[in-house]
Length: 224
Picture (cartoon, rainbow, N blue to C red):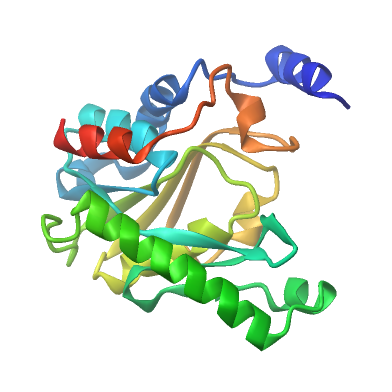
């Protein structure tokens, strides 16, 4: 199925998003229904960079503080777009051992990828400067937000990071996810929320506008 056919199929049978802001507004309604009486205990944690515009709309709708949870994908060495796992702040880490064996990724090769992504994670932490401002998550509901789920690797690391930061309840909330995402992410979050669920080639197929989000965009949205 080519891109146009896939988009037409989604338009006919599934929810579509104009852009990440539109997705965030729709997601906020679903998140509010999921957390109900605990709304005043929420801290919204965006996964940069694509999750930040989505999370900004969720935070505004819930009147909750917006902060970041830092994560980086670990790609297969010769296919970097294919997620082998992910790392997150506070030592959070997830590696798909089966996928590593399938692609012959040795521990040494994985260590090289992880070191590179750790440096980028640290660069972003310095650039955004959010961790120093983020309130304690102890006893809070951490709503972890991204713009969609592909393999779920970074979402796993983000949920583990939020849990490690002390959140009593972790809600993983995304506008779009594959049909099997609840089974694959069981145990990582206490609550899983998605506006739409369908199997498509990439997260961007859910959006009319899925442009890049820059570091400057992230800083601006956090400041707003």
